[in-house]
Amino acid sequence: MKTYLKFGAIMAVIVGALVWLAVGGVADTKTYYKTVPELQKMDKQAQDQKLRVGGEVQPGSIVKSGVETSFILHQGPAMLKVVYAGSDPLPDTFRDNATALADGRLGSDGVFRANKIQAKCASKYEAKPNQKGVSHPAQMPEKISSLR
Image (cartoon, one colour):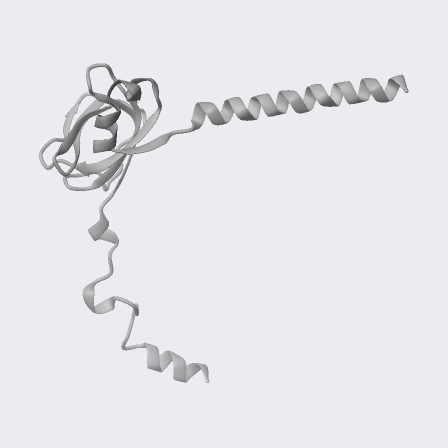
């Protein structure tokens, strides 16, 4: 009987440690997504949180200075200065008017310090107007008839 009790206690400790590690890991890595206007409404509450902010890169605002890159994210009239000093290179699609996501923290000076940047250029991935719905309309009947 004592052997089962010891085994149960050891298993409870192991399961408890695994649960504690899992909960702690999730708490450290969770990031809240906010838009620029939402971040500005949060004011000082945003300073202690790990956040992901999305918006469009203001044309002409990208300034590279050594290892730091600064730019302005905007959404409508709301603007946010972002400074990126991460070790990863910036994405190729990161340019003026691109939609960008910045992961990091808001400083007390109102500057968002990012450690990760993601960008996409929506127009690059859109289908051409004559190709919407079908990738190669002229070839479709030939392919269907050749399958029969």
